[in-house]
Image (cartoon, rainbow, N blue to C red; front, side):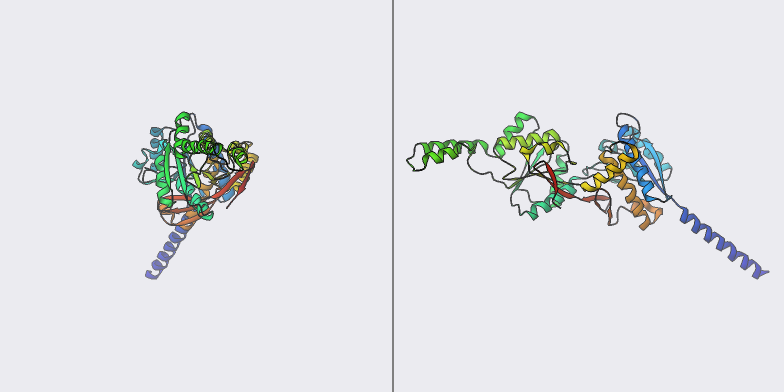
Length: 384
């Protein structure tokens, strides 16, 4: 009888073991999606949802479950939804989209948020910046500067809310900056500042003085020299080899226009800027070319846009591409790590190749290895 109970007990334990194995095998990865699905930014949320569906389809396994909640682009609604995720036992959340919605998220201790923001300064400890941040961009710029043996670089940063981001990124990248100038975006003030940075008035006066000197001289080729001098706008060089302009859109064009006005040309100095997301308006501005900048992989972006357009008959925003990659990133990391503690997977050192490019992950930080591009003669060329 005792032998019978021993056998029965072994069978029972075997069944428990098999059931636990089946249960483990069937365990799904639960991901929260915390985005604006109502309010003025709901279109952004709708596109993120669509790209998430694309990512799940491409993964092709029924192991990922997505749970959707609204931020309404409002910090109070965001924390309310985050608490609901925590009560559901969800450990990884993609979102929120906007930096302003992060302020209360530290209250949710058991969740890691992969925010779409590219800001890394003063983030809550449980928020990972998944956007293309300034650190990633300055690292790529540093590579470009070293490859081209550029010796003197000045940095121009607008007096805006990301000024501290740029300063910290410069320190982390160890990019050698000769001088860092903070400028006012108001056009009149901007022009005056650029004149000062480029010593424009002194160089202008140098030209006037030289013209007068030649005019009052008895040199043999006086007429030829005067002819050449009258073609110039200034005389004398500026004290830098390259300029990094950390600005975008029309503000970027205003800075470059001011540099051109002070007789500093991209034909003679390297004009470098931050990620412009392949802004097509820059292609038309041939007077400001060549211009250089880091960005995500252009071919991957175009392939994603084509696929998204075919699937949903609309052009995706850039956050759609990022959300697609984040689903793949979480799935990839979850296969290599313990599902019981998903919040730890972003602390370990990992590398993931997505559509955007290569993600480097460590200590709750994500950096991107970016490509580098040149716009010249109305065309985009990949440098590396």
